[in-house]
Length: 109
Image (cartoon, rainbow, N blue to C red; front, side, top):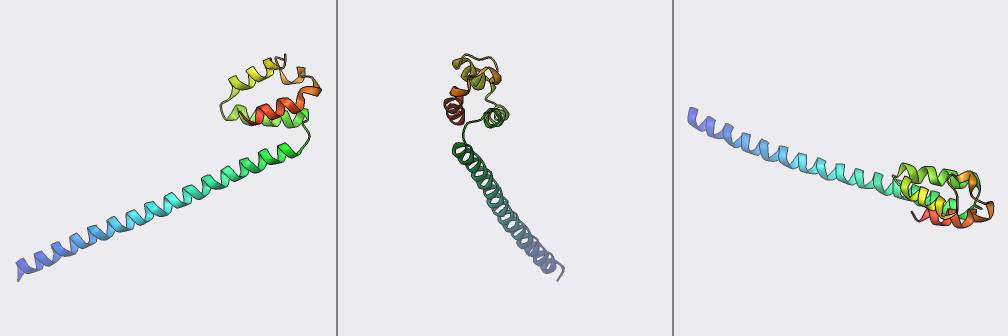
């Protein structure tokens, strides 16, 4: 009887291990889905911000905010090159008539 009980216990152990694996796999799937939903929400927010910027007239404040966002995304070098294209070292040196074109180019960085 003792050996039979050991076999039964071993069987339960195998079943428990399988159930743990299933639970972990299900949890990983849920975690992945939540992560994807968060990423989609962030993308939608960025798209909304870009669309909102496109609808507004190009202002110094708007361009400054956009360039700050691009800098945070690691595009400092591209921002500096873009300013140089408009003959400026800093944003305040850009001519106001160049604001719309500058903003449009900065958005696609």
